[in-house]
Length: 414
Ligand code: C5P
Image (spheres, rainbow, N blue to C red):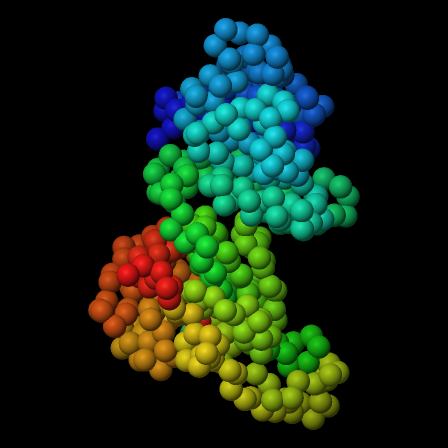
């Protein structure tokens, strides 16, 4: 898929720059041409000699070397590329890209391009979480820039952990292949959900038993988070209300972390009004009636504690049957191990949803915690079967279907 493709690779100044050497090797192995641009700060981390030797191409470093050429070198660099990749994308470069700067070769090439751009952010977790970076990322996503990572983990600074680690070279490679697969049709094209507000729930809820124990459903949050990322790429203004998960926050999305179903309901209600609600969280059906404020101790008698459970609020049903602020399109999930379609149909009715994404989560399917999903879309109009897809592909297709199904807002259209 990558054979013969030309990739303009912008390397910015971050400790993760060394990992990009591995990316260059993998790209070359697959027959891609790699044209590197090094920022001055990047040269503090990797040498032009190493990068150039691995790429088998001269390394571009200086804007004015190129502009002295008769055919305006930076324009040619962008024009000749099939894809621009920025790795590592530092907080500084992201800020300059978001503001449209062209004050060095890297930013000039990025501004002069009409080709797809993929960035692999890498920075300290506090810089990644800073409102300025979140704002800049939201703007880049809105501009159609594709994003891979960052991941969670140990940082180069001793003792620092959190979101900000650059995606691994193989992940960046997979994102480059996805960019060439034509699958992210939304990237660079029209934004079908531009101006739409969307609330998405994801992950499990944790219902406390005492300060150290809780009840929960199994959920990685991967499907809900993928939908949030796809919706943001489609131009929606996304609020992702997420239970406790270990996966990174999607780019360009505003995340509200919650613990329990009660917190989740409150956060969803606070995010109203919205045009679309997608309730993908695996909400615990019950909570302990009165959680203990102290850790429960084992009894000498060996008698286990008796936990009285009460039913949790149904968040999907409260939104689907909301009297005043019901979103125009409400989507729920039905993860079932049996009677998939009957159960999905009854949920559609009972919870006031327009669409139910039904999936078989029997252990043998490997859906739980896995990367793939086989779903069936159930609506009043009937049942639509989708083939086995990755959770990212399910997310892209679902967002595209939502854009088709979304009724025009009052006062718009005919
Ligand atoms: O009834 P069941 O839990 O199978 O329904 C699944 C759908 O309902 C999912 O969309 C889930 O997010 C939503 N749900 C909810 N609040 C609950 C239970 C389920 O929003 N308390």
